[in-house]
Image 1 (tube, chains in turn cyan, brown):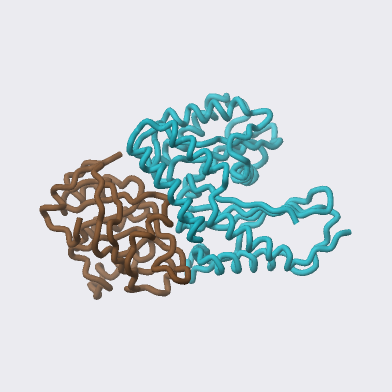
Image 2 (tube, helix red, strand yellow):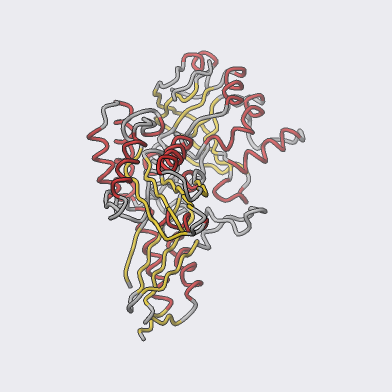
Length: 276
Length: 169
């Protein structure tokens, strides 16, 4: 049994919050640069240039990439040989507060969704998985709500054709239009239950852009091409760069159902991971 | 382009045109809009003069040490659509945000001769460089949703919807 102090988790979470919010993911920045080279539309090029410049300023001046520093989503993968000494949940939330305070991020979290008072930094949305081994893998994904608000879920009939599913996904992006800050990264969850499909779609956003799913790589490329044909472009003002990547996560599901969830990320797709 | 907006310079702005704005803008988003509309309905005094004002839909991060403002890019404008016609009626002349607006907002823009601008979406660090001064105005309890007065210089904007109701989208 390997014992890890909860404080070690707290410190890791704090670091990851800062890293995710200030330093744009390398793969996302690479894709944005590639999109800039491919773009023919002058305005679209100007906007992509501003986005790339923004990432540089954020990094050099230690400013948040985007003022919406999101609702932190924390993925914990805890090795079953690990024992945590202390209150893990409290440590994660303390880590969020510490990281957000230290880097002057934004207090976007309200404790009561109905009364909506007093915005703070925490709690995070925490997903915990038990894995083999004696390590803890932590990923922090601050999810901006402009794009989170464009999430969609559809409970397809089990006999639904792939064309219907593709149409639903493409329509989800079409109805997001300019509002969720394109160019997008689209996470898709297929299978599980209604809530699990949503989680899969969110988890898909952690994947390195362009790393294909082994089974559905063809569908991912197909959807990427179709979504880019919408020509929404950067800021929705037209152009080739509507979507930088599509990632699909799947899970077994029930014979009577076919849940499909779409979680759109804006171009400021932020996440950071660490193994403790 | 210098503030305050005159009828002439509003009329001359065309959809998709790029401008650099210098002057005063007021930061206000969801909850602040709720309160402003309540105040207008109940004929209470308003925290700033709406006549000729430019409102920026934004909730900045906290301000890091040594900086004038934190990251301060635009938030999604459509969430403010339901409050906008009343604000334009009360004299607001400009709005800055991102994303499309409803047809009711477009109609109000045409009726009251206002302009809707787009700011670079997701570029809060870059945009912070154009802010010269920040003054709190109202609703401090709203935290990041408080109303602030910003003095900006050379703030890059794209005309999203011009006073004729023509859209850049």
